[in-house]
Image 1 (cartoon, rainbow, N blue to C red):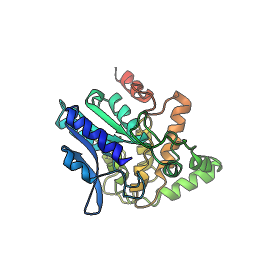
Image 2 (cartoon, rainbow, N blue to C red):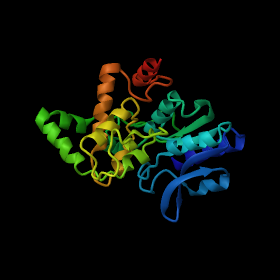
Image 3 (cartoon, rainbow, N blue to C red):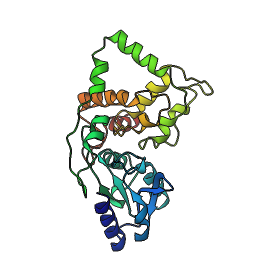
Length: 267
């Protein structure tokens, strides 16, 4: 699949359709983001850590937002999986990127990764190589839902107790683009308090991500305390879907109902 990706990127660069391509490269055994400009750069491009595509993941859309702000007139390419593409669609509706200035090169996730992520759609609309695999139901959410109310409350309080307030979940999130973060507002979260007051810190972020979370799971991977944040956000996403029939990024140009409501309230 890497050969198909490189071929497509080379075509885009040679034709001048894109100014650069935001992907992953392996340098000295470390996989990280890189903006590819020349064909010779593509030798270091990777899709994972060598074992399977998706093992080494990075919030490339977060970097894309910065590129779009610095170079608004240039068209950039970006490597996307299913969740990344959902992110692009959602970021466009929040006016964080101009979808006309972004060309995505898609790859599907392997079935094993789709199961581990419990991803409903582990592939983008279009991809250059690989095969589409089946989506997976939210088993972790059902497991918590099967508990009675008291057990659920106790479960989440015990999880939140592990928080060290490192902000890793926020910092890695490709959908965290606010210039002023509510998690740093002393009116909501008392500054200098570690661990943070429970459950305000995580409930504040969960509510803030309602209608935004694209279920990439990077927050889960970044959390040093192994708090099952993805399960929490999946549940929030299920509620939004049930109440408003909306999941971020599944339909192009479809705005979050919370986005619409907030703008209506402002008027």
